[in-house]
Length: 309
Image 1 (spheres, rainbow, N blue to C red):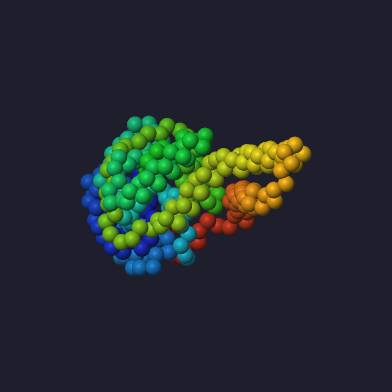
Image 2: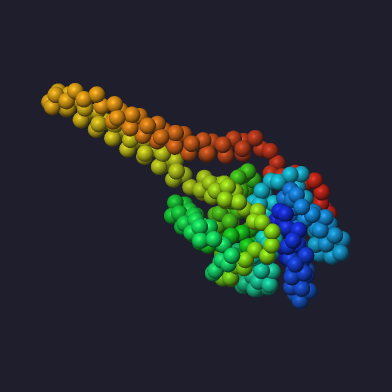
């Protein structure tokens, strides 16, 4: 198998027919032997029914369906685990990632690279708030990690079998696959493209899911938040010590006997807020350690037409 195309699917019944039509037209014009793996991540609409119909019609197309919703990154992981291609493409099913770009990605990979990621030149149909927050997240993440995670890129990329095998050795529960691929290394490059507006339906990534993904990315590839909590503790302790010295000076040299109730309350609330923030940061890291220590399977497959030895 030359190429495996992995597409996570979550409530994409309106987009699946057009996605298949564009993929089939592209693949028909290529000399590769390819497979398309649709991963149904607990959809509540007719996505699974359409996937079964497409798989029965076209032997190049296969499907995996989970027992429940496990998340976008886990759906990609399942596709990687069951793929057999010498190269693997990861793309979304909402047609924001154009299938017509795949020949260029594949050709670029053949130049000796192990990873070719699609870098978004423009992003159509997205609000100013989402564009701003995404831009800030990628730049903050790049500044606090030692891993060179490409800016303005999603999971749309092509990787070699060597990279897929390396990803299989990284079984952590809280996946941030674009960060893991950057961490692996090897020769990597990019192609720029204009990202289209979502073809139909509602985005699977809500703001809460995006925040969770951002936390996974930060906690997986940076310990800076822990250092900030530690330094913040020292800074607050130093401020408290200076306040204590001032209180002693005011008591013995300035004869200031003010009750100080407002300043006490402000100090207590400030210290309490810093402590809770530090505990919350530590808790995020501890929760991820606990999830990995339990060693539960990343996903449970309810049904698939793929058979891998």
